[in-house]
Image (cartoon, rainbow, N blue to C red; front, side, top):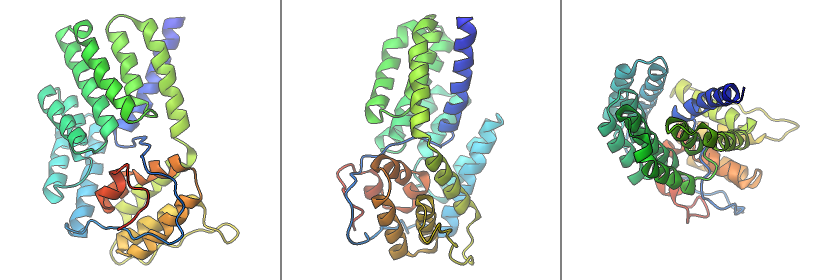
Length: 299
């Protein structure tokens, strides 16, 4: 009975972590929650034409869809298209690492995951991915027990980077199971489930889905997005949608105002996690999104 329960928990967590691997990463940033009296100025990444940025984003979405169906070679081709269109696109190295792992190319997967860590892109997930790569390779070679200390060291790095990330805990459980000690897997699985429930709030899920839809459906000729007020007040998710729409249209001042207002009206960790969404990773200056010493969104 205990074995059946453990397997059911494992499969449930697997589904959740697959979503995380696909790019819905639960990243809590390191920005402080200082309230701003004046709207900040948002830096825009403008070196690549917006059409190419959009095409690269579409290529990544196509890669994720292909990987979900097991078409890993097709996914790799889409990622290569994205890299050709937008070489500096954040998160690409991480997605290459996942795809190479699914193809069983451990060397290329490790190189891509390591590159993601070095660039400070999807850092906690990429560190956990390095642990998963080592685990999968050790499984194939029948050397899980021998490699367990190195696997766990990589997972510890991931947890130190982002204590709320469920991915390293899930992989820890997988490593214990692979080493023939399923009783030790129960606690990491439970803690992974707790992290998912705490970080994947309704608001975060709603905003992430909305950002993805805005980016995929945006056309240059579109009018400004009509935001939905409640009793004359914009809900928090509408503030992020307004900021995203403004960034897509190149209106830096409007985007700044929306983000400044959002920052003052929600818990710091929630704001930080949403600012780390891949949409803002692509459209905001990297120093704003990733520098833990940056207290404000300043020029």
